[in-house]
Image (cartoon, rainbow, N blue to C red; front, side, top):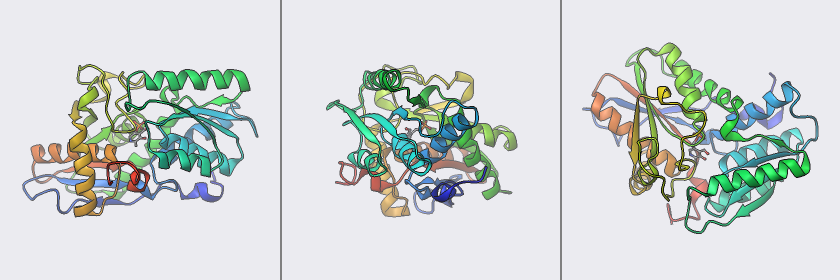
Length: 309
Ligand SMILES: Cc1ncc(COP(=O)(O)O)c(C=O)c1O
């Protein structure tokens, strides 16, 4: 499909190899720089996929309002896509998430409603946001993108996986992918696309150690935005991954800072978690392999918080 205006700038992001954080005793680690997307996040891919699929099958009509619950990244991307395509957007978010994301949604013209959660990302927060978005959809007739249950959003990430295959041909071969799980859209789309060309791909789901539900632990409070929602995301099944790595939030934050200073990869905490897991897997695999992960979004989204404060 031909992309209108700024939507054409989504995707085709660079991929770079870590040079400092990974030694010669380790497999290579390659990072897809998704901050290069228009709102600085890989979520631009899924926002476009969700809206275009709904347009194509008539669930979304010209000018109809759209509603979503979001930590802010999906909201920023949806706000961007809806601005270009002329859909009014209602967002339910929370003060538990970066203020930069809230302001980005507003900058693109979205109407944002915040649910207070001063403790951080609690297991109750996402269900409360979902319930409020459902109310708004019922009251206004808005199209609910409902990211956790939306299967179109996974399609948005298959292209990311396809780009990796094109960008990293030959040797050393891709052996593993690590991805922090929120909706699991990125993890599923990328691993499904990669697995078609990479036999035996080792698929590593990443979650916060403080809310390590996929690892069999209890839900808990943490500060790695974008995932660790306190329950298994509905589209992720146990057969979709080979391993789960639970990363303590302090390590994810420290890695985000380290990656900025030593690699010039400037990102948020979920990218920090992705890198912690990728580097651990790369050390275990040893030389002659490639481990791939994603820079989820830009560090610019986190400048007012304590990550870089
Ligand atoms: C900052 C951040 N990191 C990671 C993720 C996880 O991505 P996914 O929902 O594709 O699992 C999200 C999703 O909201 C996010 O906002």
